[in-house]
Image 1: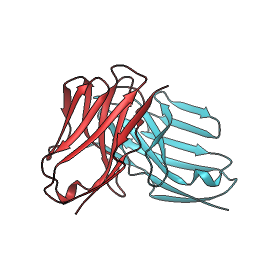
Image 2: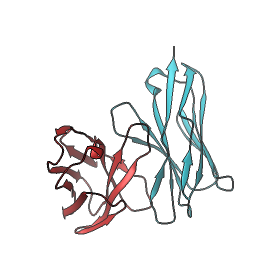
Image 3: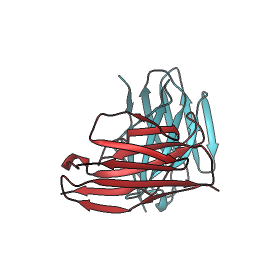
Image 4: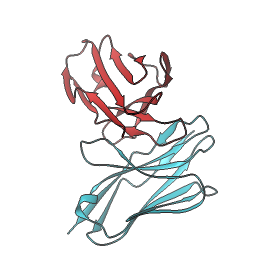
Length: 109
Length: 112
């Protein structure tokens, strides 16, 4: 079957760095996506990885290892507004997104 | 720039009543369109997707249906709502099937 695993909840301190891990099992693979979702709002696109390695975009970076079925989202210089859920989604061979349940990130002052 | 609209934002409906949710996209042509449902604490569940006018693919058998009467309009419907239809309904679009999807603001549906 197809599956995405990510931690349910994480806590970090303002100004610090946090890494949110995601492992996936899909039938075929066409990329790994990360989205941010604030409570009560729609998800917003953060990053896309299809090749192994690190993609950096400002304070956010995303890493992919296809051989390990593993990705992480790295958030630096955490701000209170980064408190949100972070959704990991893998695209299978039919170009369908398989979604994780999301990681709720709590930022403390 | 592209924008995506959904309405209504919230909806409370009795069991057995009909449903119609509408989604429109501006600023792009021939987008791929998607309907998702998100239940609390769960991942997004793909309900329908469309690659063109009149072309609808269903991912989950249920009492919902979708239609695409115009290039940038996507409608989610039901003839009789069930309690289990409650949830956060999200419409999304993408340039092509292998690209990132962009979501509308969502409709929070409560069936009583």
